Image (cartoon, rainbow, N blue to C red):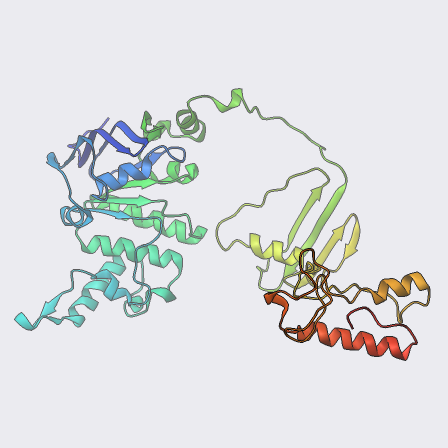
Length: 425
């Protein structure tokens, strides 16, 4: 229940795309200095609603009021001028420009009257103040955006919104590419915005962070309002129940399966790897078991998988496969498939070619073309492909140097050992 006049109020919002009714009578209310989460399954209409509020889409029916005044934006520029700014999941920054250039992009401060000379000193001073409000040091002001960490880029987006006198800040999945430390810093910035009266619309699939930083939750399902939760009611089970429309415990009860699975197939014991964190990793995967690895970006999930696969060198620890210690120096190399342009080469084991006639035949025929042996362009070829009429196709008229080289080696080696040369050599 809101105790103050709403900063933003959307009533009966309807939006239809060709063949899809994205929003059907959706309403929400946002108070000054409130952090409101909008959650729902994929396709529930969260992003569509936010884009309508920010002027990206035009609504088909309904009203949007800002501080009690009905508004209808023709584009994002109108919404920005009114103080409503949307920070997309994919950041909208010019990576090749400096931080100060991004902060004032499209609203640069100038001097010199009609000459309109950029007031870089004033922009740098004002930009440093904006960065300080989001917790970034002033020495970032002249750095290129492409050199910043993902979390710092997110804060630059927020600082740019503060420079535009934001009243409603919409954040679409702001923590999707942030580490835990960067996420904690973002929470502090949101709390600071809240204390200054800025209202925040927060979209996220991570329900734990919704409970941590949001004052209220609006749930959408299939383009309609599914319910609303106050601060004291916010919980994982309550949000999921509203999102899916039923209690998941009825369909997927928790079952304890202690000791399930077969013998350990893969075991990692205190493993460290090149380029990884100093903390050793230990895990065990049993036969018939599905093991999931979860973590934020930079936690080391991909790097650990590369170390197990042999892409990264394991520096300490033990990897066991079916209980036996193994050392994986490199990834397995699959044999390339045979093609008309390359010879088929089979591997023969041992220090020398075997003397048995069957093995000799196998090794001799390992160097051969699938279709046509190399020959001079335009000449008759030993083509065995169906429908070839004995002539090489345009694709095979040019001699294959690799095939000729292998054929020459085969002919020389066969002659030296008193064997007949392979056909086509």
